[in-house]
Length: 184
Image 1 (cartoon, rainbow, N blue to C red):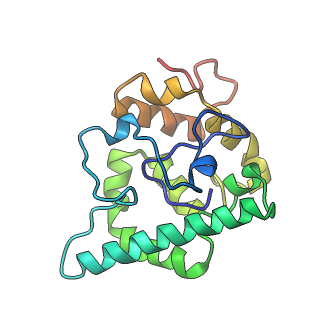
Image 2: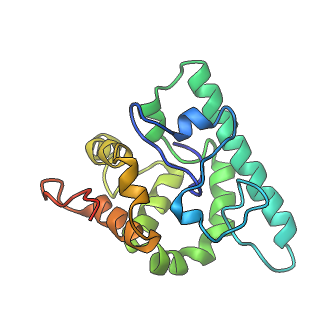
């Protein structure tokens, strides 16, 4: 998945509603995380304020659309499988990755507080694709695929804050733990 995280869910290799299936139509289903938030655009995944806020928001949306289009092209041309795309860098080029760093760096502390330490680390690692969960792509493949294949109920059956804590654990917790990926 080389598109920004926001109102999206990814499953591999098959599932009901996946980013890789939705990017062609740019139609994304709202998840419980989105309750109470009004979005002018489905790519409004950041709150950017200040003197350059409007221009930065436009640059952010353009970068997201470009990343989604790049993902679509790779899938349509069969240059990558869904699983390969999910483990590829989040951004298709260094310029987009640098823009993401520039616009989101000040959010890191808040993200750690709101999302969880491991989720923020995963997002930082994945933007350039060098690491996945502090390890090489192949080493992390099982964990990433298992997270991507968590059932919809994992994401939808509890308050968003509890889901974030559960996802944070899934990113670093023991895969042999019977509670890993639990809905409770």
